[in-house]
Every structure is written in structure tokens, then in C-alpha cells.
Amino acid sequence: MWGKVAKDALLHGRIYIMEHVELFFKSIFIDNMVFATFLGMCSYLAVSKKVSTAIGLGAAVIFVLAVTVPMNWLLDQYVLREGALAWLGPEYASYDLSFLSFILFIATIATMVQLVEIVVEKFSPSLYNSLGIFLPLIAVNCAILGGSLFMQSRDIPSLGLAFNYGISSGIGWFLAILAIAAIREKIRYSSVPAPLRGLGITFILTGLMAIGFMSFGGMLTGGDDGAKEEPAKEQVEHLKQLDKNKKEKEVVEQKTALNQ
Amino acid sequence: MAEVAEQEEKVKVPKEPLFSKKNRKLITDPLTDNNPITIQVLGICSALAITAQLKASIVMAVSVLFVLGVGNVVISLMRNIIPSKIRIIVQLIVVASLVIIVDLVLKAFAYELSKELSVFIGLIITNCIIMGRFEAFALGNGPWKSFLDGIGNAAGYGLILVIVGFFRELLGSGTLLGIPVLGDPIEKTGLYAFGYENNGFMLLSPMALIVVGLIIWVQRSRNKALIED
Image 1: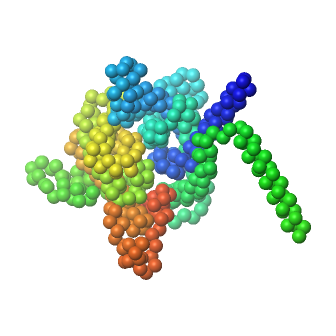
Image 2: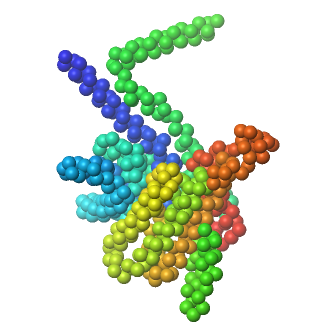
Image 3: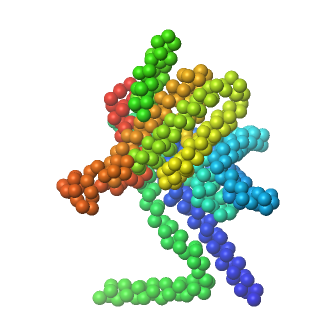
């Protein structure tokens, strides 16, 4: 009996981890904030002239997203949604405050950014010196509010996943700004047509990069269905065995083909 | 959007120079040489994400026009009582309230479209163009000037949105505002009779970036003063 319990726990653990891994890669590559939804473009274009500043801003974005998305998830789950106030008592169960979500989300973000700024200044002056100037900028970065709004519209199911979503979409944004900053540092030495120099070529480059990132779209199409079916362990073993057999067969076939 | 600006210019009040040369410049400048998108690089996110259809672009442009026009006036009226330390939060609250109004109106009268625009209406709050104008203009100028500045900048933003939306919808799906203008691709009428095909690539998001890049190219080759070095 205990064996079965352990097996179940393992299986659930596996699904749980897979869920996280999937969301992680999905938010970084497939739903990349810059290339798929164009969030945070303003600061992406304005602060990407040098790699070092780009790293500073990118790190700040990861940090703030990781804090605000779970906060707003809690807010959404326990205050804003239809029926979310049920924990206050049955008479509150029918309230639907979702129309307030914009104002509450942005208030959370603005206050969190201030709070983070104060805390970082107190406990890590060196981090503050490198992130400091970017933190106030971030309150109005669409990537931050966008992260919370997408979290709400995509119905992220748990706090852990919301945290994961915050961090990984931040990493996606970080990668994007890092890449464009590096390209812009190099492109200064190429002869771009004069009217395109600076902003114009950055737009076109970002477009080309976005086309490149579209190729990640197929990365998880198989994984989405797999997670829902919850394959039993025996079946997995069986499938593995089948695969092995198949591979062996193929190898044999290849060998025979080669021999012929 | 350009018509709005022109109409307002025609209504001239003789005694008080409501539309003095300086005030007119507030509206016309952002349309061309000081365009929020192509020159100031503000408010790019929404400009790119929702321009696959002309209709969505127009709705977005009008929403921003409303939010920026009204918001600029409100901030300008409050400019002397806002403590400068918490001004960002005050600004955000003002914008968020206005955006909630826009969102609810869209949900009530154009539900399909509001579904299509999804989170991007909410993202007007953090549209840098709005915070940018609050910070740079409304906090230091009177309500009337701020109103003109808001309208002008929103119009300049809307102009680019409409241009991008126009080309993306025309070349991508061969329609304008949902009405087929190039003929029927299945029946092979109109242009399609000559073997023309829709370029589905225009509907994908990367093309928005490239189209804006091309607009910048055209604008800067016409006005050499704007070229960066």
C-alpha cells in the first residue's frame, strides 16, 4: 500500500515539476515579453545603448516582476475575483470587484517598487547603486503591469506558478534587452543608412529577432497535452520499452541497409 | 486624428489668443517633427501589439486621446497640490481611473473588440506617452495648454497607429475595417484575378516593428534634421 502512495507522490511530483518547467520555458521563449507581446518596449529601446545599463535594468525587471506578480495573484485570488471575498463571510460571496483590478494592480506595483527601493537601499547599498536609478523607471514599465494582467487573464492556478511566471517572464525580458544592447554596441561600426541610424535600425533588428523567436513556438506543442493526461508509470515504462525496441529495430534496419 | 486638430484650429476666438501660434504648435508639432512614437520613442508597446487590424488601431488611438486629453487637464489642475515625492502614484491613480472608464465603456458597447484588445487597454496605464506628458508638460503648465498638448500628442500617436494598422490590414488580409477592398481571395476577383496573394506575414507581430522602422526611415529621410548620429 505504501508503495502505491509513494508512487502517486512521485507521479504528482513529476507532474508538478513538469508544470513549472513548462511554464518557465514558455514564458522565456515562446511568450517572450518583448518579442511576442511587445511589453516594456519603451525602456527596451531607451536603455539598450550599453550592455552594462541593460543588465542593470534587466535585473531590476526580473526582481520587481518576481515580487509583484505573486502579490497581485494573491490580490486577485482573495479580493478581486467574482466570489473571492467569500472568506469574509457568505454575504460577501457574490461580490465581483474585478473592475478594480487595474487600479489595485498599479497601486501594488507602485508601492512595491518604492518599498523595494527602500529595502534595497538599507540592506545592500552596492545593489542599490547599480539598480537604484532604474527602480523608479520600472513602476511605469508596461512589462510589470503586463505581467500581472497576463497572469490574471491566463488564470495562473497557484501562487508558486505565479512566482515562476514572474521570474521567467522577467528573464525573457532580460535576455531580450541584453541581446539588443549587444547588437547595438556592435552595429555602431557598420554603415547603416543615415536616416535609419539609431532608432530605425533598432526597430528593424527587433523585428528580425522576433521572427527568430517565433521558431520557439513549436517547442512545447507536444508537452501541453501530455501534462493533462497524467501518464501512469507503468505506461511510461511500457512506452520506454517500446521505444527501445523500436530504436533497436531501426538500428538493425539501418545496419542491414548499410550492408546492402 | 488630424481632422480633430484642424477643426480646433479653425474655431478662432479673437480677443483671447486661445489658439495663438504657440498653442497651435502644441498640437501640430507632435504630429510630425516631435512625434511621440517615431521621435520621442514613447508608447511603443501598444502601438505594435494591436495594429494588425485598422479598427483596433482606431479604437486604441481614440482611447489614448481621451485618457491623455482628460488626464493632462486633471494633472495640470492638481499640479500645485501634488507633493512631488508621491507624484508618480498620484499620476498612476488618475490614469488608472480614466482607463477603467474606457475599459468599461468598451466592454459595454464593443464587447468583441474589447476581448480582442485584451490586456492592452489596461496597459494604457503604463503607456509611457501618458506618464511622459504628465511629467514633462502637465506638471508645469496650465490646463488649457496641457489639454492641447495632450490632444496633440495623442493625435501624433494615433496617426502612426492608423498608418501601421492601415498597411498591415491592407497587405495582410486585403481588407480595411473588415471590408474587402482588393477583391475576394477565394472567388479570385479584383486584384486576386491577376495572381495577387495576401501576405499573411504582415499579420504577425514582428512585422509591426519592421513597419514602424520603415516609417521612421521615411520620416527621417524627408527631414534630415532628425537623423541621429
